[in-house]
Image 1 (tube, rainbow, N blue to C red):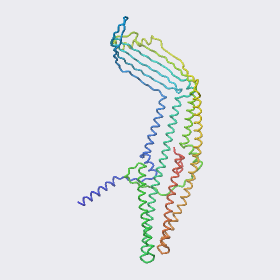
Image 2 (cartoon, rainbow, N blue to C red):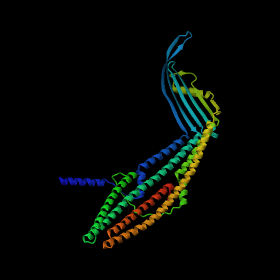
Image 3 (cartoon, rainbow, N blue to C red):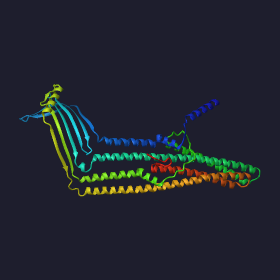
Image 4 (cartoon, rainbow, N blue to C red):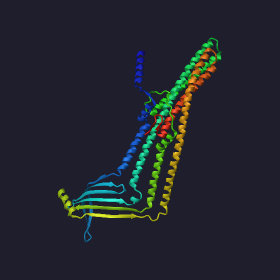
Length: 496
């Protein structure tokens, strides 16, 4: 029974190991997965769909639209009264069946007016008199607000606002994409830091274990005092504790990384990145110029200025005379006299068509005007407020440019500084490793005590950790510079 249980447990473990998917990821592969699987990117894709459809809807408002209305057969039965000359009242039932349909084609104009054609047919069957009446009407008309030609054009302004909102949404999505790249990079290098930190802790444990074995043998041979041997044992216990803590932190960082890029939590993740790096010389003038040109904040300020100009124009137009032109040409046909309800519909339509040809066309043309006279300075105050908001938007744009220039210059300086520090610490690690190797040999030979060895070991640990931190700082600095300038200086290419 015990053998069966053991075999079953082994089979379950093998099945779990098979089900667990393993990812060996580089930074670029991690970013690619995040763009496809992460919550933030899926949300960004939906934002893009919303912005695209909002623009399509705005464009659709200035295109030809067609609508058709029906009054499906509507039967009405009511009581009506009749009073004769003697004042006697009588009541009788009124029974009618009414139906109608009309088709309207409207073409909005860039001048905020519209041209339209509407045609409709209606008919009523009166069951009291057993008679039918029918009407066919077609109208061609135009409606044009004249003040839109010299004042505020609501159609062109609405379309311009929609285009600006679309542009802002698209640029915002691109910025969010670069932010996602930075977030993935930060999480990736944080996990890399924990992995390398665990490796450093393990190497430190190995070195301390070797030193402990040497001290134990030297103590057994009577070459060192007991207190030194005990101290080496304590140092090894601390090294083991540091390694265990590093393993716990590594597991936590790995889970956070998998959650960010959208991987299942039971997946195994290994990073395929060493500490090699590419020295990048960043041109400060180019970085600043690219940031000012491509940064969303600058374009947002431009858009805000343009929107404020539209608002100012709209407010000023409130005091202008409102003039509109209305004109139409209409042909109408009716059956000249009510026909029997049993009359075929084709005969009714023929009578209507004949009547259209005989009846002269109806037409109308006219203008309406509305002139503001007294508003107690309300509009003037609103115009001044709009002018102040416009100046405020222009000032904000100027200040935003200065902030971006300062931010990018400081970031370029930071990247340069981190590169210099990384190159220096890279040499420092090589020197520390060589020095520790010599010190360990001297301790083995009995030339120095355990305290000197511990100092040299701590120096090596510090050098390795400082080099790792400098490497991550440099890589994240380049990633941060890319998202804040829309230019990839590592590969020398713009971000479109």
